[in-house]
Amino acid sequence: MVSPEGASSAAESIALGGHVGTHIDALCHFSCGGKLFGGHEAAVVQSYDGGLRKWPVDGVRPIFRRGVMLDVAGVVGVEELAEDFKVTPEHLEVAEAHGGVKVGAGDVVLLRTGWARYWGDAARFIRAQKGGAVHGPGPELAGAKWLSARKVFAAGSDTIAFERVPAANMPVHVHLLVESGIHIMEALNLEEAARERFYEFLFIAAPLKIRGGTGAPVRAFAAV
Figure (cartoon, rainbow, N blue to C red):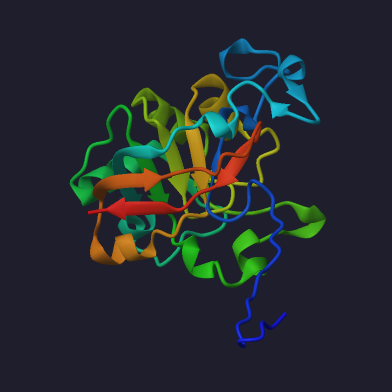
């Protein structure tokens, strides 16, 4: 459409899932044994027209918290971790010392694996193998318990699944979201922070208010 004065406009249509791109998992994203965080029965608090009424993403307030980056790839001495790499509590402690930081209660803790460099190559970033299973590095249950013991607010990474996958039972998601009430963020770009050695910063993000949603895209900022 062009106006008589020659003005015109452009627009786009956007369709996406709540767990693609840089996003946050609401606590209702996972249940175990049919129960959400706090023991709430998932079947009772969900509907097709309203999503999840307990712990939805529209209940997550804008985040202004201390952020800590633990550069696991950096302390291991590689550009990116191998797809089957297990991030252990020992790796996290070495990364703390490397960055001169100490993870504390209420922090947003971001684990760098180096996989953000693959963002432009979807097949490599997702690394789906035969049968459709996604492969990627990350912590297993011991690493998740290291984070929950420090009572962090959220944990994130530059991978699509945060935990080492494939993992049939997704124990890290279950432990953090269902058992501990700790949010997860995925597909963060931590490369500039690693280059500039920003290990401590003000972390800022605001999830889209998707009513009853299990997750939502965020724009994430590290204010140094």
